Amino acid sequence: VSIEDGTPVEHSGSWHACISHSTKTATDAVRKVLLDSEKRDDYGVYEFNGGGFGKHIHALADACDAEGRNALSLAAKGPRAEINKHLLLCGQYMLTIGPPEHRSKTSVVLRAQDLGEQSDYGAIFDKADKDANGKLD
Image (cartoon, rainbow, N blue to C red; front, side, top):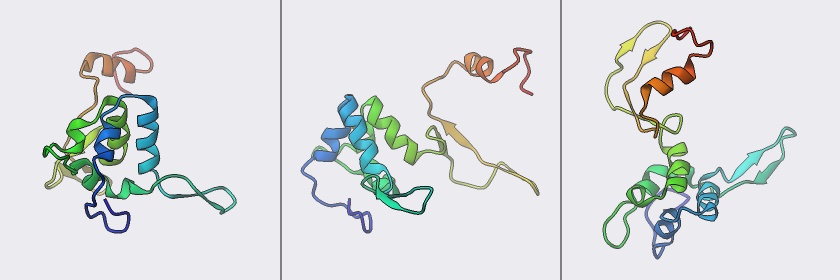
């Protein structure tokens, strides 16, 4: 996709080839492509950080290969995790479009689908139960 406006450009399958590999090199490359292009340090100095394509994550995830398959469906585990960091809320929750489930003066509750790999909810609870008292305080 174009860095300026996110429109599709010819890439000869390089994006799909990169994200379909489960190597550390491929995962690192995807991370660099998606990171902001400039990063400001504590002193206000800008330095090159990455490709800056994270702002076009929806177009990149939906980009189709020559056979019509979208990039997200072809992504290996490591590159998919990097894509999800930009695509999903907290890297794991896909928000449902629609009105909030609940709204008050201090909060808004949105519906989301958990796309994380951990589906053992007992283990999730036990991990969150810091003092092992069976309650989430």
